[in-house]
Length: 551
Image (cartoon, rainbow, N blue to C red; front, side, top):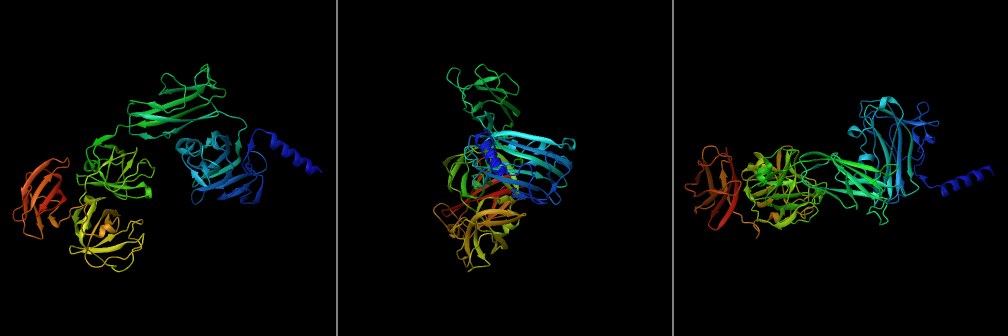
């Protein structure tokens, strides 16, 4: 009978209380065995501890020998818009100041959200780590509001290599009433923004913002860099314009109709850095920039290939240069196709494995693109160094596959050669329509994007069409240009016929600097300064463009 009364009392307490604890065994009083606390599903390098406890009989002792160790539990039944208080007690026995952190996140059907509330659920303290706080038991607690799509919460803490940390009295408590919350959803704290105009997006829960006398709960006060408070009577983004370069901090607070702070106060802040991107005329100037700096591209390069992986795109322009857009954050939401021009590109110049990349900060718009003529190259040209051709659309005219007659597989390298030499790596794009098809036999033209892996060039065809000599989109001709780079004032230009060759030379800004007929297969370029130029070579109705480097 005693057990029945106890169960009835527990039921009534849960049913009629205004809040609810959602974690299983957050006090660590129950253990399956000495290394497995009951109810915790992600358990690494822990042991039951009976001496160093915050309360009760047991805590968790976690050591991180061998790398990062986790302790986690997934909670279902999260209600969007409800407020939840996350609490952790911890004690760092040994470490170097980068020893422990909370690593929790909202989730939707098992897919974790690493963005929403990341600054309080994953990035507490300097560098994101808990303060060691003199090796004493310390509480971390924060109240957050479940985002609109969340139906789960993944509760996790981490101990880092070389540290020993004690954990106790964890809690995920669903608040009873409508607790007002305030947050900044964009930009992220610490973001670098390449614009003097910034829109700050707010999240307000359980509090109606509006004008006095309209039945609203109150309104918003915000200050920029400690300046005068601005009153805001809606939850639209805060538009900050004309910001100076450098760091800025926006403080935001909920107040009542009398402009008084709530009790307890509901505040949030975000710090970001504004930079003024350097304007560059074209991709050649962009590629000459500094990795880590931000740039605004003033022309509209043409898309030569798009991929779903990393939202990647290859772009090229009339300056003869190309670059890979690496957009893992999904800043570009507009859909682009091969042949489209991209206008309004702003972002950071990056580098991965010696490959220059453009990491966009904003969306771009579709405009009319230019016709991109693949530069005719040889295998030897590419093997001499991929840097001049990186991410460009090129064509090898007389390529031969060593594995001709076999089958193209994804994630596989193939050797190709041409009369100039070899082998050169052909690396299929995994999504291309020729994967699973037969590797061509004989000498064939291959059009493709030049890549680089560990300093060695490779080429990737985009589709079956790239194994065809000519299409209506591209003008192709067989011209050899050598030496390239040139340092003696003369460059040799030859073709398969003895017809007259006409050459027009443009600088990287598109200005014509030379127009000449080739005599005895030699072009005099001694009047040109050191730099990169584009040659338009024409003969008997056919033409192509090639890049020329003068040292």
